[in-house]
Amino acid sequence: MPVVLGQVVSRTGTNPGGCDNERGARLAVDELNAAGGLLGQPVELVVADDRTSPAHAVKAFAEVVQAPVAGVVGTSFSNASLAIIPAAETVRVPYVSTGAADSQVDPVRPFAFMTPPTASAVAEQLLRYCRAHGLAKVALVGDENSVFARTGLGKHLDLAPGHGVEWTHIERFPMGTTEFAALFERVRGSGAQAVMAWVTGPPAVELVRQRPRDLPLLMSHGNSDRRFLDLAGPAAEGVVAAASLGVVARDLPESPVRDAAVALANAFEARHGYAPSLYTVDGYTAVKLLAAAVAAAGSADPSQVRDALEAVEVITPQGEYRYTATDHHGLTARHVAVTVVDGGRFVPTPWCRDELTATRQTRETPQ
Image 1 (cartoon, rainbow, N blue to C red):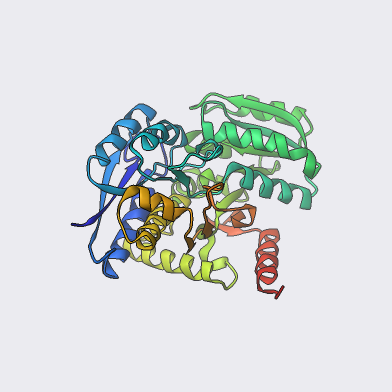
Image 2 (spheres, one colour):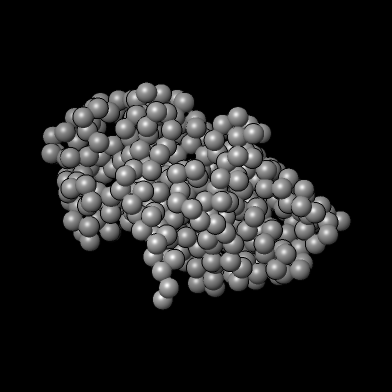
């Protein structure tokens, strides 16, 4: 009997990361099988399409758990992931989401975990960047319909006072908005030195295309993928964006995380011809976490896998995960890279390079 893992993914609809999410998960499964599988058995990935819809996501989850799954890799669409979690709790199957909304794991739910950095961690790192660059007056804009974006906006509002950042203009717009000229006029009128944006998909591309080039634009980690760069084209040059460590694999300082990230980048590029996105890294990481839990439990029983997830420590291209009974996200702000688009790729900002080096030196200093 194979060890079966499920995956709910956006194969269709507007979620920009669905294909890469699945490709990352499949690469991880192929690597596991090349190394002998799990528990002496091959690993099988059963996938269903959420259609970028919360209602369809619940149906997709019900479809994949019809197999005797050890766990499920969750969708990167946070709205859909939040719809799935109650079902995962009901059937008692560990659900490792690749969506980024904090409310998936805060408060902690026994069977719900997540791979991306939380909005809190991303907001903290972006605000630290603002403080280091003297950006004290900033406009905050974002998608009002996305749980991911609403969470990010809220965390920025909560954390800004501690970093000396004043929001000169705050604006929320409906999902699907593609005209931003009037928004930028209002931002200009507020005296903002920069814009902080939490928006993904086609609206993010249009926001970048229509921005004034002399107004710095900072964006969340939801856009650090190849599709965004391809669609935005030269307009993306100079945009500052948060990203997972795996997105900037070859620019990381030497460490076990860098080794894991470079190995993923090499394997993914050899197979698909382009660099892994944050969605790739999340899908890949989620499979590796579930696999580590199955191995630690010595069983594919979902309840035993869930218990093991709270105890394993796993080095991944995204960072070192240490889930606990009170922490089901496992990452911190130091696992967030602040990048700039340069030459059509995401590269760490000079500030980020210094931060990554300092973090490595701190971890290597004997206590």
